Image (cartoon, rainbow, N blue to C red; front, top):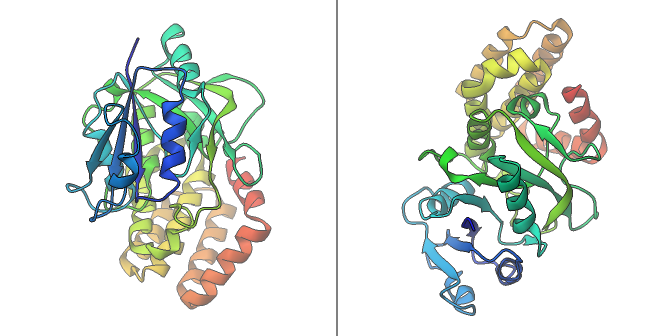
Length: 313
């Protein structure tokens, strides 16, 4: 029975208790639960002490920059299982989650297997779904065919000492794409195995505008490392990351990054897309930050799903 390392990055929220209960209730028993605490005072320690210490490994992040990616790196440093995964400290796994993914990984020989996540607020899938189990490739993610939140296990040998960029804010995509590129195919199971808490004020996606100087790096590194592949596979997706990068560059008052994203548009040969992107650049450059924030909030409330779907076509 292969060991699965479950990394739980935390800032000591009370919801950690329910998360750990869901992990200890897994039908698959060969687990290594690693709680990595990103607080200087060790807030999560008292919560972890309520559980059997032989079941949970508690470590503090004292090596990497504080933040979602640095804390996850700290957890990765302590992995000893043949597979690893992440569970946020306000999410919960269904009892059969690990067993289901391991079965597909071992019996069907897939190094990465993933399932969908359930939105705790809406009761709907958090990741795109096509209503069936299916194989997927690295290119499917670049095309935007698979997008959103998924729960996955990954064969540890694929990690090869690589880590998340800890100067970013929540840029998990950068490492995942590197890993996905190493394999021919992974497998997707069309069912929810994780419940994602989407109402917590501490979620990374809710805090993005608070750290624009680190958030802009997510898109900067994406274009640097995967821009060439995105241009070949889906120029709309390439532009999508550029436009988001422009937005956070303006919020973070980073004129160099704003110029970088503008220059990156020269590689786009889709005329309509290029004109639209330059117009957006002028808008971002000229409007005050407060107006830009309000405009972005309005888009998210009204038509962002339509915009995302257009970029994926």
